[in-house]
Image 1 (cartoon, rainbow, N blue to C red):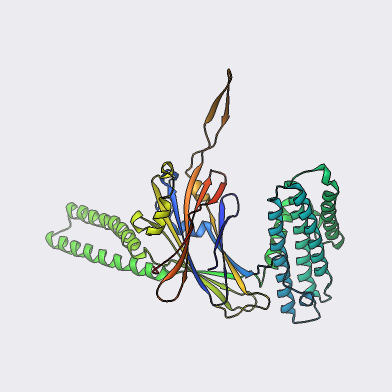
Image 2 (cartoon, rainbow, N blue to C red; image 1 turned 90 degrees about the vertical axis):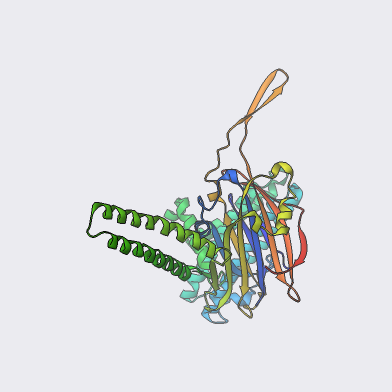
Length: 466
């Protein structure tokens, strides 16, 4: 079974990644155990609001060989293939280059040994320079193709400079490796001068950090055309919601009208009592209609899929894959036994009243084959926890300590812990399914996720499909 991965994305978000082959399907469930003191429930944060504001899905071609872009030199030569092929292959080169460099930079920054860090940095400089030379070996003469090339070249040059400046700024400092650091600085200056000579960016744009950053984000999106799939979201409950609302309104109106007609027959003429009675009836109707609609709708909706993502290739317009999504607050009795067992493995002091939020994603690849060089696509789900911190208290408090005859104190922050169980399912022979489960502990405060720790309670087991 291909394991899905859960990693931190930004300060208050994490991502779940899965790789799928042609016509493959896969399902995973996330069970959030949110402490009640965080104030998160169906009233303060509805499922619809959280899904549309804080859950984002991304799908693109994927290769495990991120250190070697799959596009050979002939693929980015304007002399071979159609113009559409040139742009597609150029964008594939750009995307693979960015993924490779991003992966390598993150890996280098995690290295604590200074010798290994700078050795790795030098290798990364050589790889990057070779790939940029490969890209610039073919500069198209066609005006239309030239604009595609300039956009990608401009962006990758800027991204390279920013990546290595990030490496220098956040990596270990050492006077013994001054020559190596100068090699990295030289690459940054080289790329900066290259863009200046090519006049890729105006002086006004370069003088404003916001303008140059936003321009590069735009170039990044343009370079992802044909590589990152276009997403269309469908609300699966729209028609059913209208039917339920209309049906309940019809029933309530029929009941109210029967009372009104009976009241009219009981009074021979219009009186103040009749008007008051009718006013009360219509007021009660409005109250009970809304409450009844919400109650019945939640009963009908519970356990039903709510949304569907359809991913389409921007160039060929072919449907590549789809995702069917669920999101519900659930009760303890609805928690699967195996998940509840993993949650109970927590230490006694960590067991507290919690709100349970369940997310499910069914992914299915529609395409029978991918473009040459790719055997998998990658789905990524990004979960932003910013709405979870809305009701959290600020980090207040002082910790006092006695040092001899002196008393010292320091400020402490208030932290919260969310437990998350990830269940991955794959069908096996017969009616049974093979499942994999792991619990994660997410520690966070009001400003960021402090740590995401995978617990050792992971387990493979077989069971009946739900």
